Length: 426
Length: 126
Image (cartoon, rainbow over the protein chains, first blue to last red):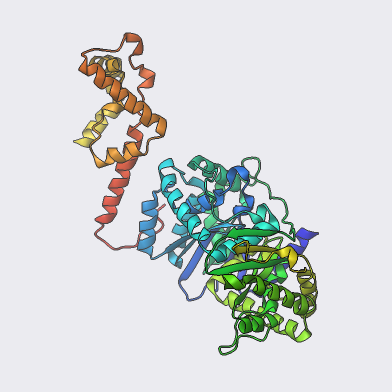
């Protein structure tokens, strides 16, 4: 029932975005592509592995981050030096990124170089050596990225609400923890080995048709991938469930304190709900007309709405940043406004939010990054994670459900000076 | 000349002729009597071999250092190990040479790219 609903959603989306086509290879790797890839001659191809941080267990905490950092390293066929030099000669850009759900290795290049880079990506997936001496380099990169994230209060607060809301699974940290159990390249190889089955890999392209891309993928090493995971433990993780009422505390004595307050919601309405919170400035000389935006402007703190949409869960909320001495009052006032004005939103506010969300969704589609997100979501059946249109009645109901429930919170502040989620009256 | 040498080495008749002599030759060279392996003797003062040694797993490095120290000590005291402790042929495997080959290939590849004369795009090279 649920699966059928998701599939229908993906199809609805695929028709909404112009020029999206889907295909799959003989061994079941799904391929999604959009030929309208911007200017003629430009193309991109991404290998998306459904092996993000939510798949980590206690024994592999941080493995997804390491696996991301192992992208484009030495393979059986070619050294990482050669990969990089040939990418330079082709004027291509190689990137690797990890979200809580997926790890994406991406190449942006000219269309005539696509066959070559499909082979490169296939080797990344199937033939990376995971040599021990490379692990030392990779570990240094991973450590720097993790330290950078831990030094950023916004990243801390947003990670904190995930942890409070979903505990493990989607709550897993994006970055490898200090003293991660992943201490050798063998541990990374193990994690990759479990993840790399045709059902958990998708190839996404722009500037090429899905059939042409599927043909290239079928000729590459990806055609050798097994249908099912090669080792035990490769199944889907437990479905995400939102547990409200807890707060994550990160003690810091900085001059500015941060506090994230987040509510669980359906993934498809997450973005529209964030638009309903309405702290985004859409007119140059106005702070915005939403109650939260006016409160923040009047009181001299900042309140930014955020939303996260995953395949089976959504998170929407507001990140309050205020001088450390005022954070408690700012959070309390924010919570009061959400309870008063947003749990039962006025019809015109809902209308504004629907319009803003629709513009944002289409605006995202007009960019390369937004297109890739839609293609990724379609290819891996994560329809909820793609930006979508929501109608007014549905948004009103979603707002009542989300903002009437018990939220989670994460504070990056002094424990003596901050607010606590169970005292906010939800 | 190198091609000629490789052809001779690959020649099966030549190999059949040499094989019986090989182990005698290795035994006569004497390093096994000091408990060393052949790869312990490779000249390590080159960037390639330094890099290769840095890629060895920890246990191999420990064993290598131990064998070197023991061999120096034996050499200083003009002694040999008792026969039972000589390096056994099955222990005398190439633990370093494959890594040296790999590093040498990487250096050669880097030199080739750094001295590339033409600017044709290299596409679809599998």
